[in-house]
Image (cartoon, rainbow, N blue to C red; front, side, top):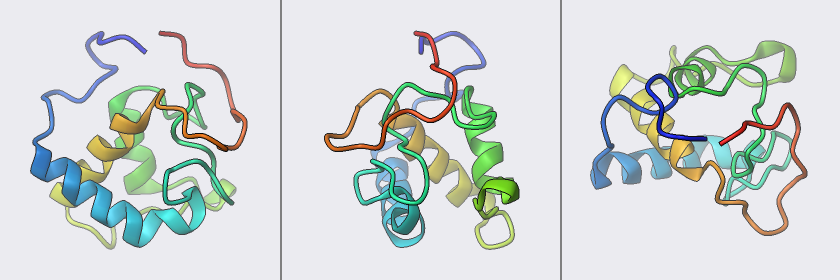
Length: 113
């Protein structure tokens, strides 16, 4: 996906934010999405496919905060404060199109560059 307004985080995340996001991902998300975000029970987050409504950075944040209960994805807004949700969003966003080896095949519509 390109760097068009509305499709990326408003500002580049700091290294510290990405690390915070990675640590929380490892702690809370890897059980479903895999340690490399390659997808286990949950979808592969490293491919170019959109899952549910998660195409723009704001949509990624909404999915993390609110979840997708119909697909088994919990919302984390009741657990995490906004800065942690933002760090998770930045980390997951940074994984897009990295295509982890051995990842689940795309699930959803392909997100065009």
